[in-house]
Length: 178
Image (cartoon, rainbow, N blue to C red; front, side, top):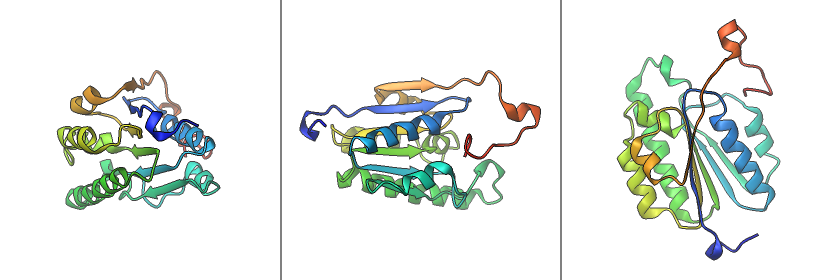
């Protein structure tokens, strides 16, 4: 394992309308944990809904997991609360990044917050540019990644949906989608 001082941290953005943005990020998180890196996952949208990846993370001493969102916000009845929650989660993200405790930080679904204009892409990009330790890997997921975030990223992947089971009336399957 490379010493932090010899590591070049990457900023990775997974965006687009297709499936797999969070799954890809969690794959990187588990890969890093397997190498002994300290990982922090912070979820902006998913709240108390149990997922397989969150259950799997409980088996790792070096993964800290925070599912703090208010749920699927596109069905929101209280947008002011969603904004408040997102801002609180963003403050936690900043604390975790500046703590320098973690080698990898996953900001799952943060791009949605930019798309909804709850947190500006400029604010996120400026914070990352000024405060992320150069050795820290940072992974940001969700649709509608802000241009400012894409600009500072090292790797950007856009997931494109070609076909989805939901279009045929098949609901999310445990173990595959959550």
